[in-house]
Image (cartoon, rainbow, N blue to C red):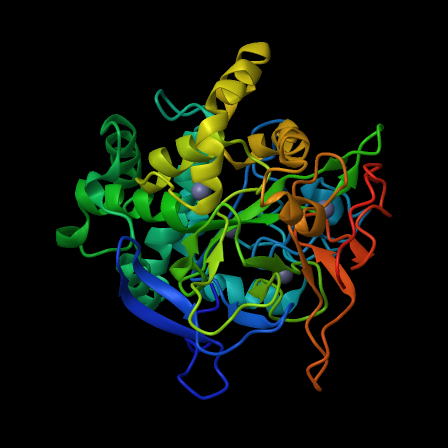
Length: 427
Ligand SMILES: [Zn+2]
Ligand SMILES: [Zn+2]
Ligand SMILES: [Zn+2]
Ligand SMILES: [Zn+2]
């Protein structure tokens, strides 16, 4: 994507808050605090190697509400019809009307990077083919096609970024079944990736798909509000962020990431990782790879299937004993079975309610949920303070990384959560 920008690994300097440790026993490579870190402090800012669109859940197509390059929301009221929109927003000359851009700079950048003539042709062919044959006919297959087009496009548009992509975690052998990777590979073969034929192999396609599964971050659509006041959120695009990928997972993370895709910056696709609370020097820095309110069972399932490990964090050790309760919940509603992709996470807020109730009194981490979980219904976001002032004063305002809501740090219940249980938190 931003292949014309230099890659931004954090340079080693006294001020850098992060240190890479090659091997923490039992954890592998890890990021640790190089010094004491303040609440809200920016740990990392990272640009994507590539971005690809999420599917519009309404009709399974790729949403045309966002810029085809930077994924900014396109101005409201711009007509969707290709003919009507000529003159309103710059279009791709190759697939007019299918891909639109927020402005001329994005179009010019896209034609050289994310939307080269090959990518344009590949996407047009897939679109005109209509429904893909099984096993690619589901949402997962279509989404992986979009990823592979972006990845193979990167191989030609920015070989250096493609090499970085290949250096990320995820191997060809990480698939439960070879069927889907093989089908995707043969589809890619039919649209002639811009790659040395000797390098184009089923193993490469399978490895790329694993890297996507283990490293992609979702950029959320602007949060809407449903009729019941609950937060409605969907992913607008996925991105591969090579530095942010180095964070290990913890079910009670001490850092979380923010994006501001609709912000004014021309680096709007960067993600920013901030400290949730104070972190002492030497402590490992972790993100949660999914909303923190998932149940033990949901978390273990996702981590095992998508990342290949069982989590033994402090929280999981405590919640292991609650397994029976989770299984009861699952019997009541069979939602867990549908937890196939990121979009499904929106429905899962009952886990947190269970945790908060259960935690009253005897769960040492209940504090986290009161202090650092967004209380808006259906949000599931994590809160971190806004960055400290240049003088190092911690902000009293907490920001939700999913719905973008702000609240005063010492009042966890002022935004409609309605769970005022009188727990006192320090500011
Ligand atoms: Zn744009
Ligand atoms: Zn095009
Ligand atoms: Zn865990
Ligand atoms: Zn929220």
